[in-house]
Structure formats: structure tokens, C-alpha cells
Image 1: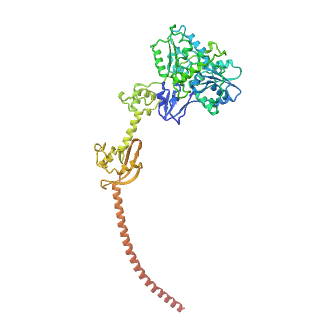
Image 2: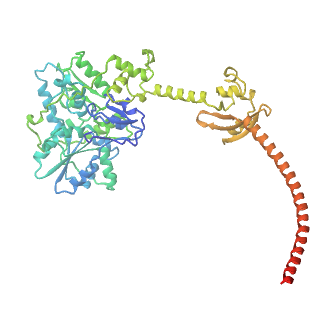
Image 3: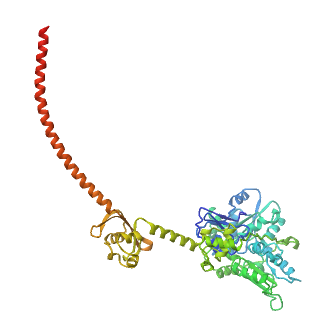
Length: 570
């Protein structure tokens, strides 16, 4: 990535929502993690807005900004015209005061350069036989360069107000200045990096949300600040440039609409833009000038601007701000030549699979016929075929197919249950049988046609199942008897709350229990016999002891006599 959007892989949960919401399919997947396909990405930031885990976020060049603030350079802010709608309830002058507290020395509105841009649009419209598409929105420029290069001639060869304004500031402000653009757009970061000459571009791009973070970290309470004036405000005629139709109004198209034969359009939102580009490409519309903004409603709905206000409410904030505008006295105009911009064909051509290769991939995910291609969109692609092509190109994984993975999981679950050596019984909270696997059928001498949908008490004692459901306490390896004691099982019974079912896993231990009983009886008999033998042996020992005692006394006496005789012989 070009330091625009950061993907935190450990947070990504493989939900595919970013891909479903990406109009240009610029999200790839590998090892269940999303990654951004730079060759396709237009940096609209939509994936950042829709990610439920917050796994994607704009890169925040906070360390670089801190270095600028602590350096000898002076800092100028080029403030996007939508800044009012980023801070609802805060007076514009207090936002300016907050910027000064952060350490910025000069604050001007980016829109002040827009008047020169729209003048160039008007110049380009003369003697032109193909539509002219505005070039102010960097996401739109990326869209045409990467996905519609055949329309490059339609794209106005004019830099955006951000680039022009930064260029103007660096030329007009005396000394060593760094220019920081602050706005609602992530693609501005990419637009800045595309220009190699640092003197003709901003030095840093921040979003309004990142500006809010800076205010918070520096304990700046905007509501409590004094009102200060902008160093370089834009004129009232250009102040609503951030809204849809802003460029048309600035170019004077609305005022001359009745007397001019020019056909102009304002299109915002990627779906409408893609449809309209197709119309232009296939010559289905007659257009002279088309203003295009990637975000629905214009820049007041950019990914770097977050609040709960609707688009009409944000428009009202801009319009209210316009009522108090005053005309800028500073002359920051620039020769027309500096506003030229060369657009490039940056479309990446990925290799395409053959029909046989597509069919092979589809078969591997259970799509054997066209009827199997559900085109549900769960994977993020519009069709199974489109997803198969992405798999071939290494941009997607087979297991992203939700119906396939669901069927596979169900199949695996079914195989496990059906092939288990244990009896598995599943009932709902009304004790109605949901599943009786083959071992259970054999164990209770039942068939699936007789058990499914019937109450379990028709086949066995349900006391244990009811107890588990009532107490929500599992039974683990309990020995129980069924069929009037003829069947002995080791049973584990537990509740699956989310599905309101009780699962019983029963192992037939009838033979083992019989053997244990038989072994116990044999041990008892052996113990009795051993006791009898011991008793008899003790009796014999006692008798032997008695005889041995008498013999010992006689022997002792004889030995004493023999000793005396020997001594006497001496």
C-alpha cells in the first residue's frame, strides 16, 4: 500500500463485508484475511466506513506531523471546504482557534484555489466534441485511470484545488513553510504521493477524524475557545464547492442554463458514477460537462468525516456558513499552465482463465451446473463465475463461498453423526425428536420414520432429558438403564441454548456392566473360598504348633543331658 489504508490482519474476521461494499472489487483474501489490491483500489475509503471490526483504517502520519511542529518550519493549513460539517455545533472561528493552538501558523481554505480550477474547466469546454469530466475528486481520477482508461481523454487535465492551493501557498508565503491539507478524503493522501515534486504538493494529508484526535490528545476543548478569523477565506461563490453541483455552480452553469446549449450533469456516489461512465463509454448520453464526486452527496460524506447527521443536514451547515462569508483580499492566483495535469492509464490487466479452468474451480466448490451457481453475493462478488475468476487470479479463496462451506460443514456434521459409534439423540425443548442416528435406532430397535417428529417419551424414559433442560445443567457419563433394565448406557446429555435443543450421547455398556457384575460375583465367591481355606489352614497351623511345642521341650532336655555327659567325661 502507498501509506493510505492500513489493514490490521489480527482484527479482520473474514466477514467479506468490505468486498461486498467495494464497487471495484479491490479487496483480496488470503488465509482468511483481507488485503487491498493496490492496482484496483481507488482509495475511496468505503471499506474503512463499513468494516464492522475496524480492521481497516487510514494511515495517521502523526509522528511526521509532530516532527514538523517541533521543527523550525512554519506550518500552513489548507482546510477543505467541508470542515464545517465535520464539527457540528462548533462555530467555524473556534475550529480556526483550535488549529492555532495545535501550532499552525497560517490557515486558508482549499476552496480559494477552486475558482482558478473551474475557470480552466470553462476554457477546456470551448471547441470540444467529447464530454469533459471534472478532475477534482482523486477517487474519481483513480477510477478512470485504473478501470476506465478508455475515457482518459474525457478527464480534465487540471490539478485539484488541494494540489493547486498547496502550490500557491508555497510560492506566496515567505520562508520555510510546510503545508498540511486537512479534509474528509483518504484518496488525497494517494493524490499527494503521485506528485513527485514536493514543492507542488502538500507535505502532509490529515482527515477531519485525525484532527479530532489531535484536539483530544492536546486537551483542546473547541467549544470553550475564542472565535478567530481565517487567514485566507474563500469567496462566497466557491464556498459550497464540497457539495454536489458545487463545481457547476462555481463555473456559472446554473446561472446561464437557460441561455446556454451546454449539457451538464452532477453525479455522486460510486454506483451512479459507474453507471454513468458506462453510458459515456457506450455513447448513450450527450454530455458537455460532468461533475463527478465518488462520495454520495459530495465531500461532506467522505470517509474521514464522521457524525450522525444526514447529508441534507450537513448541506445546511455549509449553506449557513456561506451566509457569513466575506471575500478574500489576498491574491493567490496562478498561471493556467501550473494547473495542467497529465492523467495516466493505470489499469492492471489480470490474466483470465479459460472456460474449462473456470468450470474446474466451480466444481471444486460444489457448482457442477449453472443451476448450482446461486450468485448469492455472500462471498462479496456479484456472481459465482466472477468469484471463480478471482480465485484463479489469486485474489480470492475457494472457502469464501458461504453456501459451499455451509454445505460442507453440514455434510461433515452429518457424516460424524451418522458414522458415530455412539447413539445420538437430539430433541427440542418440547421433547420432539429432531435426530435419531442409526446407532440410536438400533439400540432402541426403532427406525427414523417412526422416531422423527414424535415425542421421545414414546420410545424411552425422558426424565434425564427433562432434568437437563429444566436445570440447564449437563449430565456427564451417567450410568442409566432403559427398557426395564435390559439396556444399560453411559449417557452424556447437554443443552444447546441457541438452537433450543437437548443432545443425548449414549454408549451401550450393557455387556460391560454384565461382565462387571459377573466379575464382582466371582470375586465374592473367591473371597469366601479364600476365607474358608484360611480358616482351615489356621486350624492346621495351630495343631502343628502344638505338636512342635512338645517335641521342642523334649529335644531341649535331651541336649542338656548330653552336655552334662560330655562335661563329665572330661
